[in-house]
Length: 438
Image (cartoon, rainbow, N blue to C red):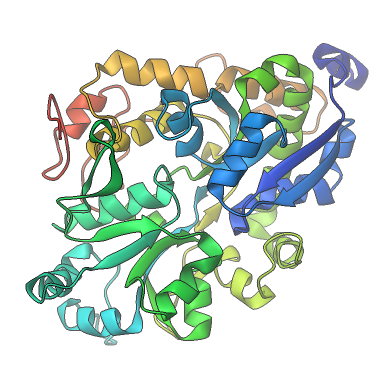
């Protein structure tokens, strides 16, 4: 098929002038690169990319049409579609990245944790650092009648679920939600009290002592190191290796009205993701320069580069290799797997955001409503036909069923198989399962 035939196969965009939203985090990179490298223009699209104040404003603007689409937390389209928080049908045909988050604690908490952490021959802490080593500190706070406060970015954020997963794996209860009782604090029965803090405000909130730690995306963990106010202790790569992070979300209504435009947007972003991971991350220094500009992330080059170029700094001076800290294309990072959606739904159930038991079939039904690998496959096929990508760079669309192989790389050693969400929930000591209800 020739280039013009592939173009004809998709058809001209229904809407050419588009505005996309993002939050100031390094994992918005595919949007910035698709814009800066002209990939949107190649598809006949004229795009504005605009930073938003917080995740709620961003979602509301996609719902009311002020934004055509946005960089979103993986849980946002799922939460909106099942009516947790804001009710709206949001879909995603493109997963933006894997990994990219970390958990940071204040200097004071780090000093109190240190005696409990095993050391290697050089005297450095042995990684991964488990929440087991934080538990004695949390227990001290409880004994003194003081709250142990931690920040995360949004109730349906990956950060909330990763932080909860890590805490619970160490025997620290992160609390339940009970929306049917009007309690959406997520702090019922909690040992550690989690609350929302917007990502760019995390370091200042930690420095003020309002929170004792947080889970956030970059560059806001590395910023704590540079400012000398806290210590990143674990990355999400160590909590769940190659976990899905952000997605590109649009309203179902918008997607139905603009199918060709949507396909072209996905094509441009697939190319951007490939560029970000090409040549063993050889393009990352240029990506860091772009992201450091005020209209994008607006943090110092050195701060963004600290994680974006294959290393991660924990305690000041303790720099370790984490080549896959940010993955944009490798490991089929851009493919919207049903099993990724189902994992987030299991965590919503685990912590009470979904208050009632649901059959396994329900988890898949919701995943299929929100995650659209059919749209992704069509966009990828078009790129292959145009000679811009190779079929080997994608899953085999003729056999792909939307489920990753059972995943074993969790910090607590529990295996996740997306085909059996209820059996998965039964494996946890802390959290709702079966017919449990708050």
